[in-house]
Image 1 (cartoon, rainbow, N blue to C red):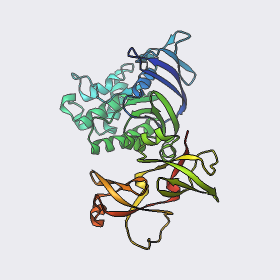
Image 2 (tube, rainbow, N blue to C red):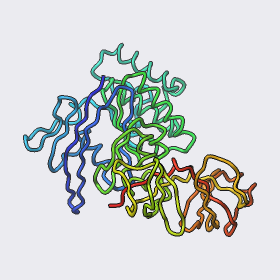
Image 3 (cartoon, helix red, strand yellow):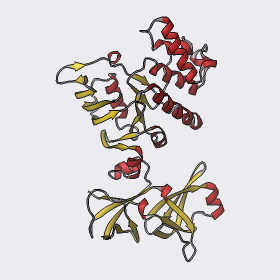
Image 4 (cartoon, one colour):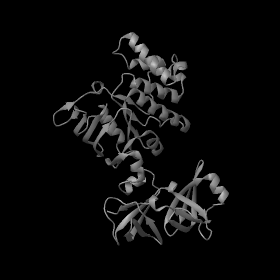
Length: 368
């Protein structure tokens, strides 16, 4: 069952920081809406206000036809009456209760037999049966977070609020928990609102995304659409678009737009909803994963990439199995390739190379 969440509030902290959130979006059963953005932009403020853990300075919050907060009317429904599930970064389990008893705690309103059956079902579903009689200090961080998830969904809430739930986990465990969360939500028919600053978590766990920057929600849409077509330069940088460069339109015809950027020229087809004309100033956004780096040979090998920019590698940033290469091609371009590929190609700072980019991989934004 879908419920529409309406958020329109403003909250001012004592130090003068203001969070102003406006969001109207359906929370469909089994789906995840991600509230995404850098640390310190107000994501947790929004989540706490929805949960009823924070009373905003002014505004309204509605869930379906239920008014949870309306400061003008003096309405404020306390957390325990909103019927939501809530999971924070730290598991916050009761230290004196076993895994099983922690899960059962979320079912206090049920008769004993029903409570035990429901808890056993969730403990088994999340692979916790072997640890059911252990105390929280006797299980791993990943297991503790599974217990928190089980407790939060035990009473079958219509929506689950998750505040950076994977932040304290190692990479392998967070991948597994993300998969288990998606399966749990689909099985239980529960919608979720997930707060994270990690774009990998957002892409892997989310269906839709609301990008928050500077205390405001700036873009809302399907995860793939927002990551591929950010609404502005700030959103582009927030979702991990490494190359955002100033450019000027030279011509636009036949669905192809040619722009001048520094000493380089680029061909693109990805534009926003306004037509582009000669002389328009734009921003060219290119994800590092969409740039192929080739040895500087002539002629260029055949392929679908329309842009072949000759340049010099000026910097290499190593990130595990992936290396990010910065190239000076008359304009600075960032590319991502595997460490093995870089080594096999002999790429080092100072090496001449070619950045190959498909026209469809360049997203153009009108510059304000």
